Amino acid sequence: MIPLIVDPARVPIALVGRGRAAERRLGLLREAGAEDIEVFSDAPSAGLAASAGERLRLWLPDRDELTRTALLWIVDLPIAEAVPLARRARATGCLVNVEDVTAACDFHNPAQVRRGDLLLTVSTGGKSPGLAARIRRELARSFGPEWAGRLNRIAAKRGAWRRSGRPLHELARLTNRTID
Image 1: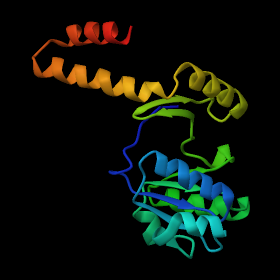
Image 2 (image 1 turned 30 degrees about the vertical axis):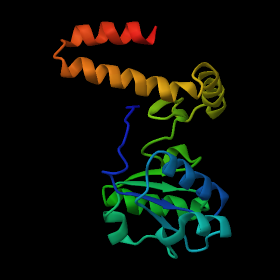
Image 3 (image 1 turned 60 degrees about the horizontal axis):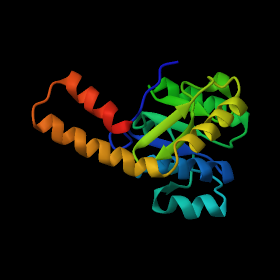
Image 4 (image 1 turned 90 degrees about the horizontal axis):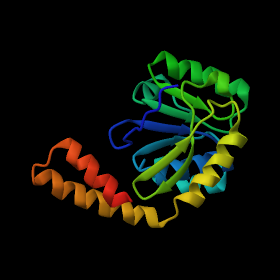
């Protein structure tokens, strides 16, 4: 596995789904900053339709739409529909995640704790979501909501130190002292 952090403002993202799981995934993607996301559903639940709003396309994506997508999440479709759709998307160069079907995924979603811009993630490569969830809960206890503000204060100090021309080794030392 290669961990990456993707800027959703720079990468075209789409979601395909029909129900509560798709609605939940849409919420997580939006929390991560994915505002310009296309949502495809040929039979959306009321909650998904409301959450997607104007972004909702009342069909499943065709080849042209898949070609314009870099990352695709397929959620709560029957496997007989999800796997062929994933294959078509992959053929266009799109990376695909079929929720809860590890063998059909190009990437996985880590368990995560989000504190403002601080993002802590845990992955087991799909082998034990329960273990990842347990570690995520421990991280959430260790890094409470106050860490969002702490990160902002650390970043402000680091920015000032960089503007003053301090070398990288000194930035690291000052940052560690500030964290302590």
